[in-house]
Amino acid sequence: MSRKLVLLNEAQVERVKDIARACSLDVETSTIEDLHSADPLIECVNCSSPNERFFMRWPQAVCHVSHHVLVINSFGKETENIVAQEPTLPNLRFACCSYCHCGSDGFRGSLRSHLITVHKDVVNVDQLPTLNGDGDYRNLLNPRLFNRKDWYWNPCFALDKLGLVWRYTPSPSEPSAVEATSRLL
Ligand SMILES: [Zn+2]
Ligand SMILES: [Zn+2]
Image (cartoon, rainbow, N blue to C red; front, side):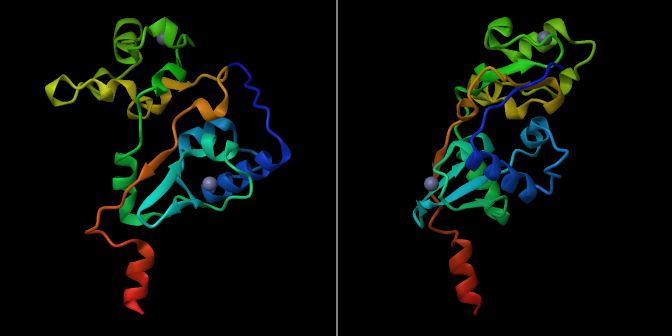
């Protein structure tokens, strides 16, 4: 694979290291692909309120306000609900095919059909995401639902373009971790 160059300032480098450590990655030897594969879920404490919490992935976290405090990958059972509210729509156009390295121009917005048409000898077609019920195509636009070995983020795009930050509204029936803890005391 070709070398990928990412330009970061000093504060951003420190933040990448913090995030890598939180993912149990070795900061000396890990690659950007290791971080993409770990794909940690990150909350900004400063931008969150109890009713509306602010989440992002590591590329957005690196570009986020440098003095804001981040919580990484420690959301317990709530993780699934938080991820369910993650926006997916624009992301596939920032992905490349791992086999022929074409970007989304090459697979014309449908990584699934590209993989089936061009790479069916190396791809496990049965494991590719399919349409949701009612013909909902959003599954096919979310690269995270594809096998990580089939694609990578296009290094030509700025890091913060590789996804969107999102606001998560906890459902009233699920007390936040803080409330649950204080009730136990
Ligand atoms: Zn923030
Ligand atoms: Zn390809």
